[in-house]
Every structure is written in C-alpha cells, then in structure tokens.
Image 1 (tube, helix red, strand yellow):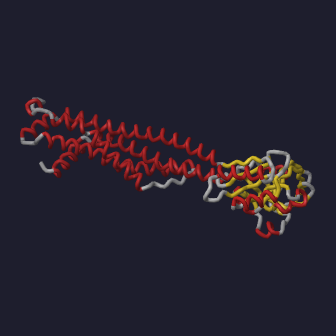
Image 2 (cartoon, helix red, strand yellow):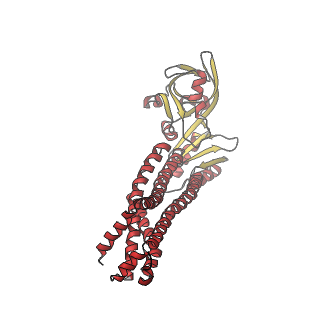
Image 3 (spheres, one colour):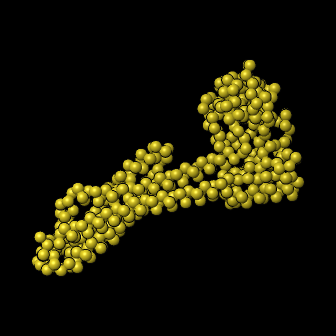
Length: 379
C-alpha cells in the first residue's frame, strides 16, 4: 500500500463520520486559536503598556528639592553640562484664579515647550501654545479641564491668576508625567511669564536620559552632583523601577494565559486520541480484512497516523482562521492594535501537527498489534 493510498483511505475514513470528525477538529481549532490569540494580544498589550509608561516619562529623571533650599536655574545649567543631558526647569505656584464671578484655587505651572511635549497634554478644546507665544512669554495659557469647568472658561476667554491677566487658548483633559502635579487643576504658561515672581527658583528639574546610561544611574549621579557641588538635598526619581515591575507582572500574566491556552490545545489532542481509539474498536473487522489481504502492521499504523495528522491539519488551519477572527474582535473591543506575526502562526501550526502526530501514536500502535484472527471474529 503506497503512501498516497494511505492518505486517500485516511481521508475517506475521516469523512465517513463527518459529525464526529467535525467536533474533533473543532476541539483542536479552539486550542490553536487560543494560543495564537494569547501570543498576539499579549504582545500587543505589552507594547501598549510600555508605550503608556514611556509617556509617563521613563526616559526622564524628575528632580525635586528635599530640603528648604530650592532648586534654581544654575542647578539646571550645572547638571546639563556635567551630565551632557538636556535639563528643563519647572515652576509651580498655588494661586487664586478668577473669571467673572467664578473663582478657583489652581496651580500656576511655568515650563518650556519641550517639557510640555514630554508630558503630552491632550487638548480637548482650543489649541496648543504657539512657538511665538513661548518665545515672547505671551500671556497665553492652557487650562486644566477641572479648573476650566469651575471657572466656566472657553478658549479665547480672559481670566486672572495670581493677579496677572491670562488668555485661555486651550483646555487640557489629561497629561502623562511622573511629576506630582495635578494638571487637571493647573494653568500652564511659558516659564518666562513667572520669572518676575519667582526669579531663578525652580520647583522641579526634568533631565532627559542619554542613550548610553540608565535612568536609575543618571538619577544617582544627579543626586550626588547636587549634594556635593550645590550642597542641596534632592530627590531624583525615574520610572525605570515601575516599568520593570510592570514588565514582570505582565510576564507572569502572559505565562498563565499561555498555559491555559496550551491546555486547550492539549484537550484537542486528547480528543483526537479518543476518536481514533473508538475508531480502532469499531473497525476491528476492517483491520482484520486488510491484514488478511496483505497489509502489514506498519501500514495499519501509518493509516491511523495519517488520520490523526488529517485531524490536526484541518484543526490547525481552522484554528488559525478562528484565531485571526478572535484577535480582530478582541483588539477592537479592548482598544489594541494587534499584528499577527507569521512566525507565531507557523510555530502554532507546527505545534498542532506535532500534537496530532503524538495523539495518534497510541491508537495506531493498538491497531497495528491486532491479530488477524481476533479482528475477523468481530461481527
């Protein structure tokens, strides 16, 4: 019996019990789809988490004064030269803001345009500050959503903050930063607007981390420089520890999901073994006739292995299609943009074929060990 004949006969046997075969294929397909979905959605989730942490300032070190002596512009200049890094200052003043009869306690935040880009404000109404407004220290301001609601401000309205008249050009609904500032209750202006009030004093320094050094190492160097050279007690923090912790938690979560998905596929493999064992019992007389006509035990074994591979092949292909559908639906539901990798599809499909082959070993061995005389006794 040639190999092609074995495959043809195996296909006929699979199609002969169409409903039973369909359920067996479905079990394998669900396992394949589960593993593919876990791999793809897990990677998309990891990318999303890293992106969100990155927006919080993982590539920056935030430095604040720990003692009574405040930071100033000279400290920022010294750090920039010593660390060969970009350093930006931040000024914060708690003030009373008024617009008509409405009043609110807000934080007046003075910063540079590059710092504002780093915290990625989401402007829901109006616009961002223009380059000319940054350079000329124009009385233009971005107002946090909660502060704007209390003051009943809209883009274009004028209001007072700390005695200075400012014009609202945009409403900010969210910001991403490691700094301890509630931007929803803040008023953001060019830092030069606050210089007449604060002089050179700064509440915070933001240091851009160069590519050749880690954030934690840079934080340690910055603290040492300000302590030794500037004589100031400071706290320097980065998001590196939080990022590593989030990555570790995500790894554990993904490992659990992979094991659950693998168990789903294993159940599909057990289904193949079960259906073939039942098939061996039902086809004992057929096996005996084949042996009496000259079929060897090896050929009988090959026939059942072919049937197992057909189940796995069909289940693998169906599972890849089902997995693609699940990934699309889940991605749209939870707001991810997953990308199915060819290597993931190939590895999952190869695993399904291997599992199908292993699942067919026991039934194939049992069928090949039947004696013709025993098999022909079956009615």
